[in-house]
Length: 94
Image 1: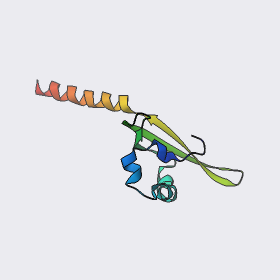
Image 2 (image 1 turned 135 degrees about the horizontal axis):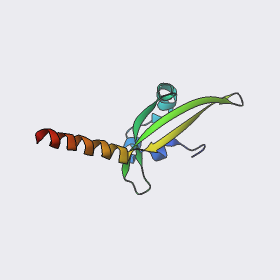
Image 3 (image 1 turned 90 degrees about the vertical axis):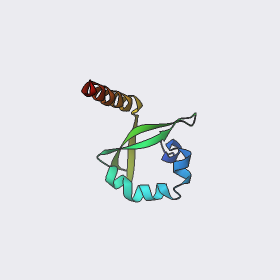
Image 4 (image 1 turned 135 degrees about the vertical axis):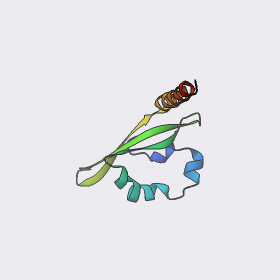
């Protein structure tokens, strides 16, 4: 997605409900996310949504501040955590 607006990965209701989100993100959120990660919602081509981890980095290239983001689909990891929690509850109830 080099050089593309990251909003194309966001669900439509999230994008349309937040005018100016990308500008605000670049001014505020990136500074908080750089060097750490957070969970955000992504949108697949078919329109379905999924949880993803976003990690961001910042560097200077040719005298210009540049950001890089790494996005990872965490659907399976999240499902495994939910399954584990349910199994624990069943075990405790037994």
